[in-house]
Length: 514
Image (cartoon, rainbow, N blue to C red; front, side, top):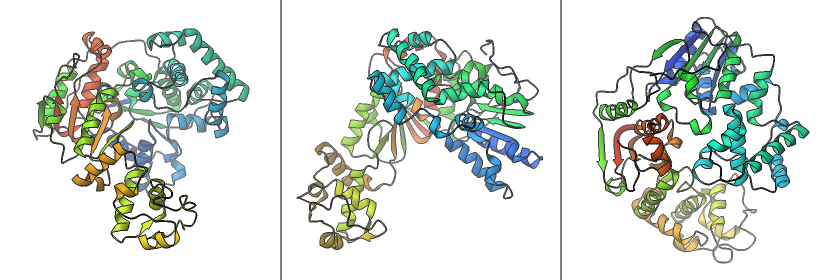
């Protein structure tokens, strides 16, 4: 059932709009690139093609594949392969000095006497208690992205500060930018929409369209003014960024020729069947006829994450809320597993590099300059390294060094095990690294276990996915109110699975029913 609402689009007509619906693992982006190649082979000039997406990674993939396929095409001919913000930036003829960032943010927060990073991740704002200034900035930008009154957005976010504080922040920001002739990234889109010109584009490709905000849809509308054909790809069932301003209703109301990609190369049958049970709960959606592989895969219900054997294979552990991952992080440390977490947890950090460097030195190997700097930074001056040598001033950045050279000429005086030599590693971390050393995981180049919120996992996949069903009370209320949004979130979580899905039974009072 589709949500029929008044569309904000003016230019998109049925005869020139091609809608590509790509359920998880069906090769949506690949399909777009194949169509792009067909258009070029049909005579469309590369410089007259626009390809827009959210991420630089997706744009790079599209550009690289096109250049690889068509050797005669020059990179400069693909100048309209950009993120939406980048396309608007170039079209407006802006330079980096006009962008509100860096020193401008420092100056602005001094005026208001408020803490503010300015470039904080939106998900981090929602999930992990960002500073007051960053929350106010998020509210301001969200209102403009949704093209709705600021006060309505402030109310919707249930902000824990006064409306007068938000208004003062936003009014001061407008005045600050105006006096210095600055634009932020949201301003770029608004200015582009109001501009009298549009890029010369005959064919336009739009990827991940279900995540476009209302303001971004207006940009697409403006870009489509002179195009002959517009290809819009997405999946409404994966529209999980409403909290960041995404406007899936516009995507659902598009009028055009619809093509549904029919086969998922990722999903196994049992996971596929469970995912479709969840989509039946979504009221406002496109109906899709698609299928999975013949392989069965597995869906396993377990009492606790501790019941899953994570000693082998790659894993993606997903939770609805960020705080639900902390106990699992502690458990993984106790087990001695390498893992990665978006906002904290293990990464291949300087301490791990330092340990590996020391072990290599003890084996008689030579190590590069960067590793030595990481090694020295984890050593106590006077105990492991002589004063005056810690910054590596005596080292040649282009050379590798062994233990003897470092000891004779570059300040190294340490001997013994890494846990004794690297005295600046915190004790808690030291115990974890010792456990990693025992399991051998310390030497993996990439963590094989990743922890993430479901929102943060968009685009990811893994052989083994563990999905926590616990939710906060606020989320549970949304689920009970038949919220399409929450069903879509857990649908995305389920469909990250390439083979084995592990569903952890609820540990608390509130959970998503699977």
